[in-house]
Amino acid sequence: ADEVEMVEAAIVEEALASIEAHPEFDLILLDYILPGTNGVKEISRIQRAWRSAPIVIVSGTATDWDMAQSFRRGVMGFIPKTYSSDEMLAGLRKVLEGERYIPPADANRVVSALVDGDEPAHITDRQKDILRLLAEGLTNKGIANRLEISQNTVRTHLTQVFRTLGVSTRTEAIFAAHREGIIDAP
Image (cartoon, rainbow, N blue to C red):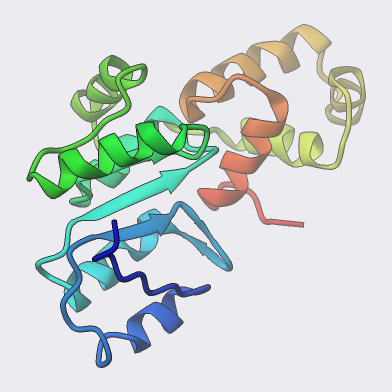
């Protein structure tokens, strides 16, 4: 719309610094992945700066748990980057009308994640070892050899890790483990 004014910031500190110039926002769009951190960890800081503006997270990689954590922290919407412009605008309009927006395809799983508890299931030390080796690029066979366990044990651990992190691929598991601080980024 012609009456829309947008203010952009590349990092959270830059966004927070703009509060003096723009104390009143109608809406805040926050990328889930930010340099040096993630959007969920910054929600509280942004809410303190702009108490009246609803926050909508935009992401291309978030899991159900990520979305649930965002809603627990007070965001009003979560919009996938894969959405078309029309779908994004429809979600943003709902938030501006005072409604929460959860992507319809994810709604049941996100609500389940909200009901299930505050934290993801525990990642064991052995699973962390497997994630670290996975991040190094090792195959299941390579991980099994390095840890002196069977490939079947590696598969069993990875299945549990995928379930715990709410992911479905090895790459997503590595990304989520880095983001959640389960393993260190390379």
